[in-house]
Structures are given as structure tokens and as C-alpha cells.
Image 1 (cartoon, rainbow, N blue to C red):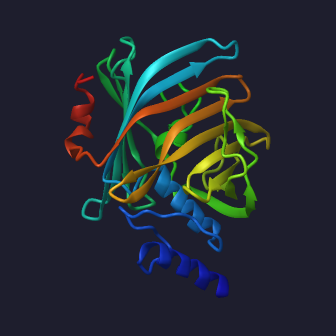
Image 2 (image 1 turned 180 degrees about the vertical axis):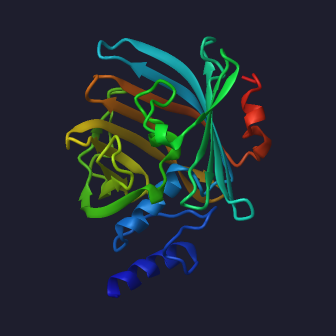
Length: 294
């Protein structure tokens, strides 16, 4: 009873509302000591999908690096609009696309995520060379995301309700040696260590172990393990605080995903980040997806 009270009190102090179970849209949250694994991971997902902001646009470059070091570059753009709308159950809409080079320009995915945790994310893929939209089934969420080492599940469809969580402990992160820019990130940063297991079984991973940064609430590093119990992938995320109207917006500025089986890795470096521009919801429709406006 005491632990529950402390957890609830921590959420109230952070938000000014009396709900310890679900963060409210358009507020900023940070995890704190005394929270449960579920409360920490609700904040981690809140930060991952920028539910604190009305909208966000992230432009940058994706690098696809094979085992030999050969690299392909793609200019990327990601736009997201947060809705939190009970009338039609829409939580947010998310658009990811390539803007260059010419042979992949316009290749895009669109996701609609709902507030009802039992409702699967609707995801569409637009292939401009075929002038075709394909609906992606939730059963195919383990597919590669736009040719990268990430899966659709990693980037778009995985939600808080898709896993169960155990708080392993609290520790200072050892630091991450980034291959992309040769820097060491988050060395000695205070983190929660969480074990996350998918509710779907069988599934392509058996568990994830995450280090959630106490300062930003972001999952800065994770190890993914296959059904055989062996680690097969790592994902690093660098989060930076952007000041927007006096609020701290924790934002993914760099991601590095390594496939330990193939030796491949994918890097996404966001260099142009804009919040609360008043993006129109009309940009996030199937009709808009098929227009070659890029």
C-alpha cells in the first residue's frame, strides 16, 4: 500500500492530476524513484511518440551500413500530429518518408494509433514506383521498416500495452560507443533498467532490456533477445531537451540500430526538428499519402 501511494503521489506532483495509471496528453513527464515498471514505461512510450507536443517534424538522414562498411544514404522526414481524441478514438497519426534520392523519393508509411489499447495501429505503405498503397497487417509488424535494421514494430506499431514489464533496478549507464560519430553517450547517466516481454507469442523477440534515462524519460539503449535467448539486436537513442514554450521536450536526435547477426546497422540522424507548427490533419490520410508532393 505504501509503495502504491508513493507512486501515485509522484505522478500527481509531476502533472497536477490525480491519475497514476495513464499520463495525460500535452503534458511533460519524467520518471522518478519509487515508480513502478509500468509507470516508467508509460512515460517512456509517451516520450517516444512525443505525446507532450501538438505536432512534430523531424528531418534528417538515414544511413544503411553493411558489414563491409559500404553505406547508402536516404534523406528522411517524419511528421506526427497528436490528437488524444476520444470522439473517434485517435491518439496520434505518424508519417515517415524518404525525400531523396530520386529512386526512393516518396516511399512512405502512415500510421494511425488509437487510444483503445485493444485496437491495433492502422499502417499503410505507399510505394511511388508502383503507385500503390498497401495496408500492413499487425501480423507483419516484424517486417523490416523501409529497408532498415529497425522493424515496423520498433518504429511505428509497438505500444505500452503490447508488453509486460519488470523493474530490474536502477544504475548509472555504462555509456554507449556510437559507431556513427565515434562519441560516447550517456556515460554514468542515472537510468532505470527494465525488462519488457511481448504479450504476443510466438513473436520475433522474447524480451527487451531497456535503460530508461531518468532525466529525459527516453529509452536510451535496449538489447533485444530472440526466442532462443540470444541477443540479436541493439538500439541506441540520443535524446536532447528542446525548450518549447517553457516546457522540456525530450526528443530523439540520433538512433543507431545494430543487427548482430548480419553485421548491418542503420543510423537515423535528425538535424532539423520543429515542434507545434500547426500541421494539418489532412496531411495524414491515404489520399495525401499517394500524392507525390515530395
